[in-house]
Length: 125
View 1 (cartoon, rainbow, N blue to C red):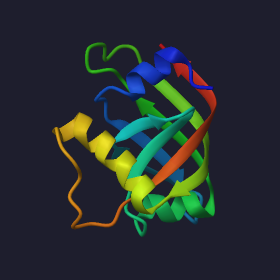
View 2: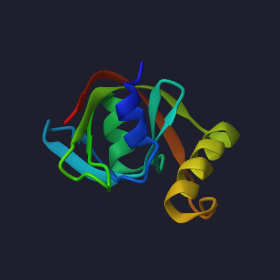
View 3: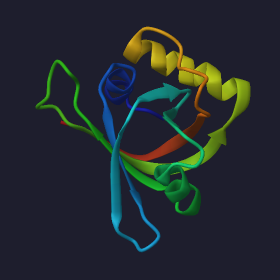
View 4: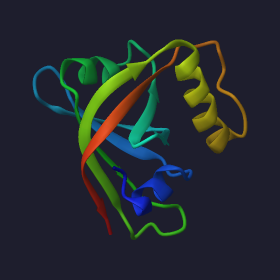
């Protein structure tokens, strides 16, 4: 279950930094748009991106972000990708997340999927 304080930050407009593991075990960290879907953390990505390839091979993930109104209150989530969404259900989530960041739906010029992350550990502050 998502901590209410964590959910509040995830549903805001903070950019998150997602860390995954490359095939050789080296860390790979990238900024991502983020949101929630039920009790999961939702991230948007291209199906062939490095982060998608990393997470399909090894679903463990770490996320860090700070609320825009309080950059001294870090939020850290560790967990694993438990489901990948594609098609219409994914586009509903992509558009909801896109709207909070840019005020409208995501361009359909690029294919997008949604990774759902089940948190194992959540830290605020």
